[in-house]
Image (cartoon, rainbow, N blue to C red; front, side, top):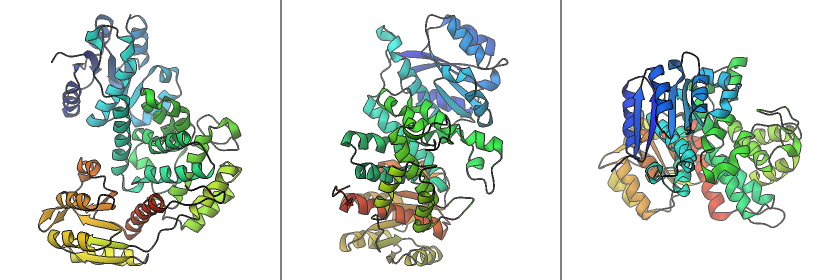
Length: 463
């Protein structure tokens, strides 16, 4: 099959670059790679390309070299910069930001980079008129699902942000319903909630998970993530209405937020809703630098910030919602052959009043799923008689709606495609702290309870 488009890459020759090129070629894009800046710039002038991708460390005079060179060309390719995370805040303050279609941290993840490049090319696709330049990408709906999967996969890499966007989406949707917003708005708020923190791909984990106060430089680094979120979704036509929503979800009602210090009604309503949901879920979640707050304490903080950080009307509706979202005592099946893990898990779950049935093999687990009225299943990755993923497929076939959580001591398995194929609720490392286990169980059950039974607002609307 002939290539549809060409792109130029100024990258070092290494394993990540090789994998990136393979992934790009699979989508019918021809990559042209060099680590020579002069050759790269000359090729921009000579070749008709859909995108240029450059490691800023290989640009002696900075990204402006690329922008100036493109300005002299007939074609206007997408620009993707690969740059160390600690330089993103510097770039964000310069005019070059407006000329760049996407940023990738260095070192980059080839899978994420391939997605970003394809999305950037799609944004520029309409500038190519002849059939040889038409890129055969997925439809907008397919791209939407891809970017949502990207958001979830990025969360799964960090145990402290597991399921955060899903819970923000849950609370935001319930709050929007309580405010009697139209169904269309509610659906868009749900999608914006899932994507609001996708820009944290550009924030170093050691800063996000720092145990202690952040320096001013570290705060500036974290505060670029709404801008990066906006950049990531910008190439996708079906998401462009959400760009201001994700950009402004850290603005404060009194004008003391970021990135643009908007105040009051200047802040998009959808952003104001997500801001409250985002803050609450962060407060009730375990973080590297602090334990989770109890819901009552978290709600107290939200109330105290009404009128300063948050919109008072949104806070009122949010509190109405959350006070009705209860996590009931539930029937949980734990499948694990390790006695010490079983005992630790069962003890932690018993603190929340759950009934825990324990089995140590796949056969008994399959029988229990059929025989018992279960609310949640927790699996180890390796279960005598079957792999955990195989057992999860069996459970999913028999009871499609039951939440499944998987635990493993083997690192990196959260990247497995089965996490998304099987729609696992959480993927926890072993050993897992009791606090993190209880947190994820509460999240799973809260989401399940809300979706199954709904909550009724004081206005009589079901949400």
